[in-house]
Each structure stands twice: as C-alpha cells, then as structure tokens.
Length: 241
Image (cartoon, rainbow, N blue to C red; front, top):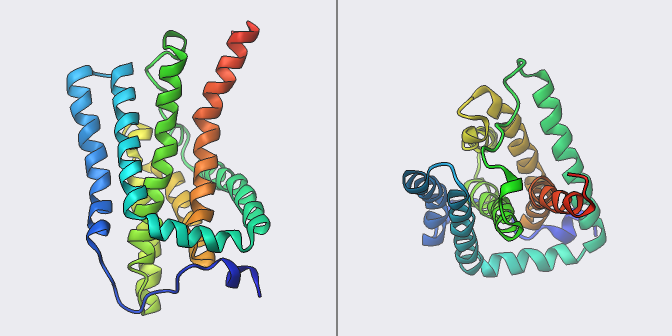
C-alpha cells in the first residue's frame, strides 16, 4: 500500500454532514476574540491579559479534544500505520512551513511583513507565568486546525471541483485574516499567513489526516513560543542575559 493509502482517515464527502460540534468549532474564534477584548478592558496590555488568554485557550483545547475525541483517535490510528514516514513528513513540513512564510514575507513591501513585538517584558515576568503564556500558541494549533483543516475544509469539501478550489483559497485567505492582530491590524502583512494556511490545507488534502498538519503547526508554534522561553531561561541561568 502507498503512504497515502495507509494514512488517509476519511474520504472526501459527497454531501455536507454537519453536527452541533462543528457549529461550536465555528464559535471558537469569536469566543477567543471576545475573551481577549474583555481581558483588555479589565487589565489592559499586561501579564494578566496574556495569562487569561492562554488559560481560556487551554479550556477550549480541552473541550475540543472531548468533542472530537473519536475523530482524533481514528486519525491517529491511521497516522501510526506509517508512523516513521508520517513523522518525517511532519519534520519536513515544519521546516517548509517556515520557508513558505519567510519567502512570502520577503516579497511583501518593506515594513509590511514583520509581526508586532510584544509589549510585555519577559525579564519582568516569573518563569512559570511565561511558561503558561507560551502554551497559548500550542493550544491554538489544535483549535485552528480543527476549525480550518477539518470543519471548514474536510466537512465542506464536496463536489464540484470548482467549489473545492474556491473553498481551499477562501479558507487560506480567512486563515491569514484572523491573524491580523499579530501584525497590528496590517492586512497586507497577513498574506504570509494566508500562504501558510494554503500550505497546511494542501498537506491535509493530500494526507486526509489531521495529525500531520496538527503536528506541523504544533512544532512551528512550539519553536516560536515555548522554545523561545526555554532559550531565555537557559541564557538567564548561564548569565548571558
């Protein structure tokens, strides 16, 4: 059997089959934005806001894991049928994801591509708080892949091919647009994340297994958030900073 025959967990649907959990998944992003807005009203840009946001995303992460437990287990069983090849794909995919983002940013107008810097000084925050905050992007990886790669792609990927093509492109554009806060509201800069969304969409459509894109996304976020925190702690311990 070929690699894709081993790992593909679900066929493409012929008709849309929607469940209440899918409706909940669509509400996740508005809930995250609403929670962020409320925390900002109470705490402003602060450690409390970042902690509250990470904890809230962690709660959503637990709920989503429960709601999609059977799907996640089914896809994992298929992933394991070609575990080493799947894991190699994940590693290569994580590298290529950063390459795609970097190349896209390199062709955007100067000053349009950089993510905004955090206004919170990590040197003034307890390590345990930094650790909790860094978990937020990891929770986000699962949430976004359930929303964009499963609910808004797999569930809606019905014939004809024209619709499927439009769906993939619109999905990728929307994925980039929801990150506009990462770039301080600069819509042009979100194009780099649109290409990242397209890359992840194509990986999912090829493997039809949520774990490949989830782990690629997870590794990417982990290196940028948790990896940075661990590196900072190591440098602080060594007296380098």
